[in-house]
Every structure is written in structure tokens, then in C-alpha cells.
Length: 231
Ligand SMILES: *Cc1c(COP(=O)(O)O)cnc(C)c1O
Image (cartoon, rainbow, N blue to C red; front, side, top):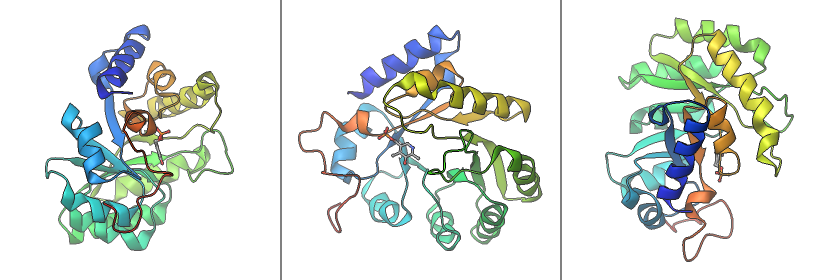
């Protein structure tokens, strides 16, 4: 699907819900795609916010793309890799799920003179396959983040358990929106290729759309990883 088609559908979903379409940002998830594919499918069509879920893949790819790209880290993050994000200027992280990770982010942000913008990842659906924190642990995470001078909590993130029917994600998104409201948080990072419209109807401010933006390329990669050296 083209960027313009995705944007049209985002806009229609926002309007259906009585929301301002400008409140919703498209993060193009570029994992598994080479720099040239990313330029062709999304950058050339005006998208400059990209999401990656592996630190090494991001480090390989970042130098090959224009400097004005705003990178967002959306995958499970190991504490010993945080230094690479801080050093490389990647300051948006959607997958923060423990107080220890918040402390590491704070230390590395201070070392590299940056501030991390974080989304706390909440496993609202209690899906055993997902990495997010339990909703009951959210107050403790918020306390840890508020104590961390170089970490700004910007919102919450969740992934709905995969189900082919997008409507099935609605209760998960609604629960995240309610949690974000209760804690006065601005951003809700929710919605992927299969369910971004439902997410926007339920209050998403950042949709993370990958496969839908690349499915029209002539030769999509066989799976979600860039082969060694292929980028
Ligand atoms: C891959 C990924 C996405 C995008 O998924 P698509 O179904 O390809 O749109 C969004 N969020 C996270 C955390 C991901 O890993």
C-alpha cells in the first residue's frame, strides 16, 4: 500500500472518531528492509520517522539514510545496547518495560548528553508472548522515570495479541488509552499494519506501520531480517 493510501486511511479513521488527524504520527517500521527499499517506499514519499527493532540492524542502516530521519526504537531492548542508541542519537524508545532499563537509559543519556523520550510498554492484554510490563507495575515505572533526570516519559505503548480480525484489537487499545489518560500521558503508541485504523479510533497518536508500506515493492525480502551485509 502506498504511503498516501496509508495516510488517507489514517485520516479517515481519525475523522470517524471525531479526532484531529494531525494528532496521529506515522512511524514507518523499516526493519528487514534495505536502505534503498526504505528510500523508494517511504522516504521518497515524505515519511521521515522510522522504527527499528534491532540495535545492530539500526546501526548498520542509520549511516546509509539521510541525517534528518528521526529514528524510533520499538523492539525489546537489552541494557548493554543502550549506549549505542545514546551515542548514535536515537532518542525515541517505545519499548521501555522495567525500572532497571530506565536507570540504564538515564545513565547513558547523561554520558552522551542526550534526553530519551520513552514510551512505557504495557502488556494490557496479559499476552504471555509479549514483553510489556504488567499494568499494575505502571506506577512504579512512572516513579522511576520521574526520578530519572534524562528520561522523559511521553506515553504508553502496547501491541495487541495477533488476531486476523482488526476489531479484536479494540479492547487492548481502549485499555491503553484509558491508562494513558489516567496518568495524564500525551502519547499512545499503538496500531500496526493490520489494525492501525482501529488503534486511531481508540486514541493512538503514533501508529507503527511496517509491512503494509512495503508490500508493493518489486522484491520484498523473504522474512523480517536484512541479510548480513545486504543493506
Ligand atoms: C514489526 C513491528 C511493527 C510493524 O508491524 P507490521 O505488522 O509489519 O506493520 C510494529 N511494532 C513493533 C514493535 C514491531 O516489531
